Amino acid sequence: MSSSQYDRNEPFNQLPLLPPPEEIENDPVVLKKLVASSRALASVNTNILRLPNPYMLVNTIALQEAKTSTAIENIFTTEDELYKAASETAQEEKTDTATKEVLRYREALWAGYDNLKKKEVVDLPMMLRVFQNIKNTTTGLRPPHAMVVIKRGESEFRAGEIIYTPPRGKGVIEQLIQNLVEYLNDDEKYPTDPLLKMCIAHYQFEAIHPFQDGNGRTGRILNLLYLISKGLLSQPTLYLSKYIIQYKDDYYYKLGTVTQRGEWKDWILFMLDAVEKTAHLTNSMIDEILRQMEMSLEYGKAHLKWYNKEINETIYTQPYIKPQFIASTLGKTSRTTLTKYMAELVETRMLSAKKVGREVYYINDNLMRILGG
Image (tube, rainbow, N blue to C red; front, side):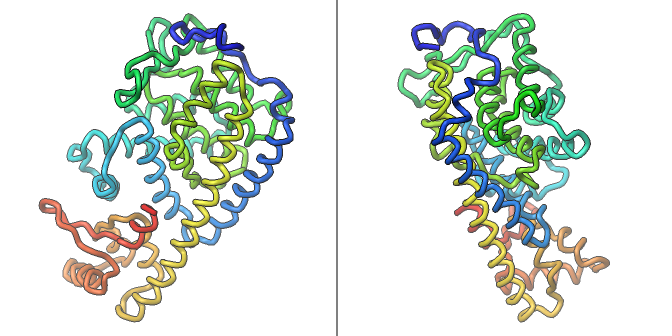
């Protein structure tokens, strides 16, 4: 479609169904990049098996992914607030709104991941579940009468200007979503490489814009879940949002060129590069965490008689540690002994203590440093 045929102020009901033109997936430059991205992704699966407890990394990376993904949509929270809230069990009312949004993203990721174990496809019920978790709502697809438009942000040139109007009308979104789901899951009818499908489907999902709000965050979670459903990723450990926020302008520009001119190639190359670079970043993070865990175990055992491998793994489950995490690892332990152990962890600088109101949080500064790098 040429730009002269596209009016950003009118609903984009002429959004083409998938698949895109066949020459896109046979382009030599795209295929070369696909090989590099696939290899990088495979290396993450190998590397994560080196972790004594893969969920440890999933938990910490999921928080980082959640924080960055919400930041893309200008929802900001501090790392302190985020990790403090994540270490809580039942004090959500004390958490600020932005932090709640970030934590809901993580919960939505886990809900989708758990759902995949029962039903190994990314379908409409999965999309709805992820969206409803993110937005803490029971609503579904955007109704036909909702006048949803995408506008420039307040800090941008020509702030408030409409840059895109998604499809609208009775049955329009339902038909487009049905086509998207079929494209993702029918590998006989659409035998495209799943990594390429993820790139293509991500554009389509964002262009359909099926929900009133939260489409960007939902779409980024679906990327990870789809890769898991196709066996390309064993755990949701790909920190894609970091690349997207780093190149946020390119991300939105290349989305727009597909809509306005049907130019898929640059968009696909951008997404494949995001996968490749993010895979390298994840591997680097795994390596650094493992090296630091090894050093911490050696140091802890040398300075604390009670310190062991299980305690070491516990303090690397997330940056902010509550004493009960240590207690559950130790087993039956008196409050006096637990207090003594926590003081020793601080004294040896394995953890640092931070008092917030009446609560004392114990921070793994080494893990904070690695995650923030």
